[in-house]
Image (cartoon, rainbow, N blue to C red; front, side):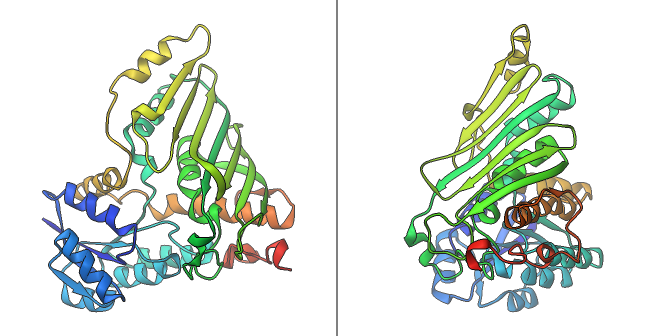
Length: 358
């Protein structure tokens, strides 16, 4: 049986522990590490983990591990993943996986020199409905993609940002674009494929933070699909909504933090009612979440394949984030591939500075 550990026992770690428990016949949670000893011990008691450590280094030195789940604040993701790769241990790292494209490229280089792999937690890719949608698209069932909307409209009040690392470029890497909407537009990118160019705006409307609290983008994809993307922390009626208009149907999902088939609807275009029948084949009650991705991760490892989501997959999403900020802060259209090492948005998502900070 494979042996797993969790580093960082804050809120999101519980979702990882639950996924590991549900797949307990394939993988075992044997250790946790956290700089907060009381929190680490409480987590270990709740999830029946036999050993705790004050940091990742001591855990790697004492344990034989196959997989480490990195669940710390964002600024620590890359340093901890690098330590795991140096020990030839696989890593499943929470979003955002890195603070910048530069950091991510450092991680990519380290992975090439290691027997370990890094996968990013983008669990919405792995819900049964999303997998079925991508399969039916590949089979041509829906026809050509034309228009899309991707809205992450959430609410985070002032108290949320009292946690010191939130709302800062140095610790969180960005606002709702980087830390909240990234799940939903990563699913959009996984469905529609490469994007070509982006026009964006971002603003600090209401929260006392360094970063934006809302952003909006108009995106042209390589296949010609036109999409809008909105990321907000100012929306009292919270929703995560993805809408895709094809030649033969509109496909939508509306949920908050996870979806099942019940959250999806398919509206056929006149004369294409058979699309609905195809969609209903193989319906599932499974909710998208960490278990779905962890299961796919284990399946890949057992086949000897790189676990999803690879760093190459992740880089496409992170480049989208960087391009959104670059367009919003410079007022220019940004094309895919334009943000190289000479761009200020390569080293940090803040780039040459948010307009409200000048």
